[in-house]
Length: 354
Image 1 (cartoon, one colour):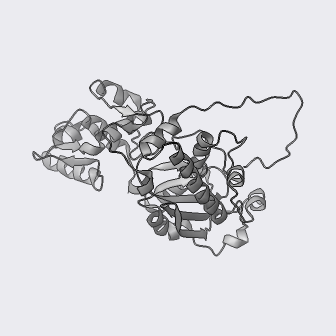
Image 2 (cartoon, rainbow, N blue to C red):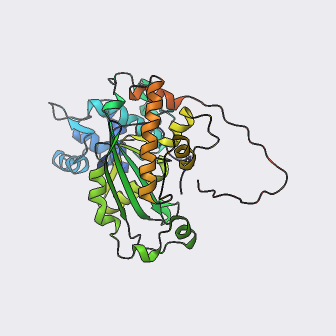
Image 3 (tube, helix red, strand yellow):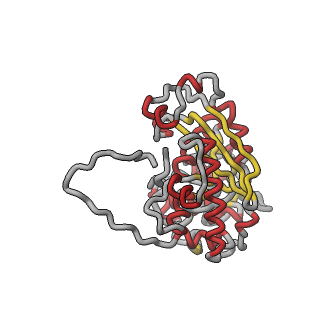
């Protein structure tokens, strides 16, 4: 249902392996922005972010500990001052800037932390912030070999295309790939707790009767997170699957997913420019990969996993041995085919979903 890349978000880039963390809030966003200028005493910090000047120290301590509990990006120095953890400070700052509309990471933005902060809170404090990036990667990052990375290829079937508009997952599949081999497959139907539209059932062959006795997502959320954790999230049009899975995980557990994401549509665009389309059918056919369960999560996830293995081999043949190399490849511009338009109305003669 979702081969064509969605333009929202920044799913092309790569951050870190999939993890969960407490969901960012407006106050933690303000704290991150305030601490970009350096460590701060707890009274000053709470006074700024909560508009409580000269709050009693014991009250400020209690509020700070509750606010930053479980958040690895915030820590304290030997003097007890709060600061952004050194290895995460640049990422937190960049995420805060991106949330406010600043274009700080064009090719591969770090999405591990996303702070909802308006521009008027950001602009005055960024005069001294310097973030050095190379195509979305920090120049101090050590090379990360692709061959030593494990992947989880995910595909979901859904009731529609709007995860925040009431649409839900009806089927979930995840395929773990390590060193060019498929190691694990997990798939399940999911009860979406809402009717499945007839046109979706016609496409996916999943009906409301099929899912009425299936587990709801909150019943499988722990297994889903366990399967994805520590792996790079991969999907064919990763933005679509990521939005649905992260929304469902947040709804079920109150935690936010973060991590490295890799889109096989984007890989195919760079590595297979000769293809007229980069739908899963076209890429799979190019590599001679059979998909016996098209538009079902298990079949599409397995086909995408096999395409991923071949695409990474293609990338290796072009000298891409590290994530930095692949990041540069994904950031490169590719010539787009010029479309010819007719003055006459064109009938719908194909499956426009991919």
